[in-house]
Length: 181
Image 1: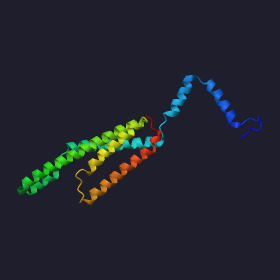
Image 2: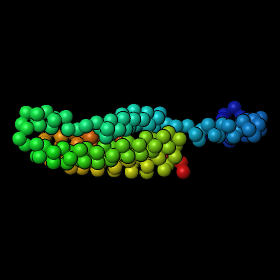
Image 3: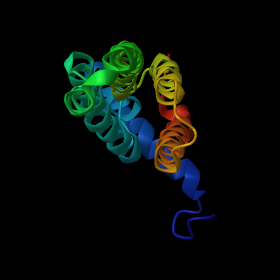
Image 4: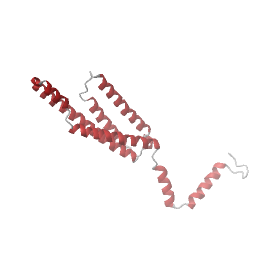
């Protein structure tokens, strides 16, 4: 494009103006401008990280509370109603306690990894995405560990939970280009 008043090309005129502006700025000011433009976090990535902080924080709290909670309250009630099946209830109580502890350990590990991964992505680090992905895999195993597949409600809940987690992973992958080593 030609500037008709001076006969100069507009891009060259712009380039000369930007060069004179660079000469007026000190070296520290230029580094500060370049650093600010490089270290800006996209709004969408910020929203995803905040959602992960909230969701994984709640999952971590839920996992810790499940680990220390007695999952056999309903068995105690049943034992008081039908005392002649005491041995059956003792075996069921051990099995349920072991499964609940294992499931909550997976949940705690997964939520902690997701929190740490989101924090690393908040700092625009690429390894945060890999840590977050590892946390998702741990939570996935926690969800399907000894899942009673004959209970339709639990299976539907597990599928919805898994779908949401992988949607979040896909959204993080869409922001991968903004992350640095």
